[in-house]
Length: 112
Image 1: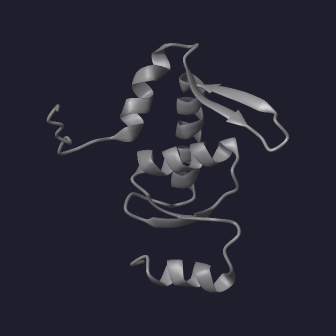
Image 2: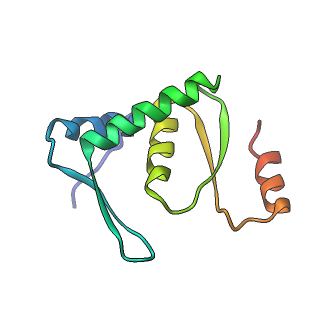
C-alpha cells in the first residue's frame, strides 16, 4: 500500500486554478431536478470564483471571518464556496431546510 502524506499546507483553489489553462476541461457537470444539464469549465469556474471573492471582499468580509451560507443545490453554490475558500473565509454550510432554532444553534456554536 502506498504511504500517503498530506501536505502541511494545501490550497484547494490553487488546485482548481491549475486546470483553468485548458479552456475545454470540464470542472462541473450539473443536472437540475428537471434534468437540465449545464457544464462549467475550469476557466469559467475560476472566473466566477474570483468574481464572487471580490464581491465578498467588497462587502467587507475578510480572511478569518465566519459566514453561514444557505444555498440550494445550484451552480452558484460552487462559486460561493470556492470564493470563500480563496478569500480565507470560514464557511458554515447550512441547508435551506433548517429551522430557525437550527440556524441559531449553528450561529451560536460557530465561535463567532
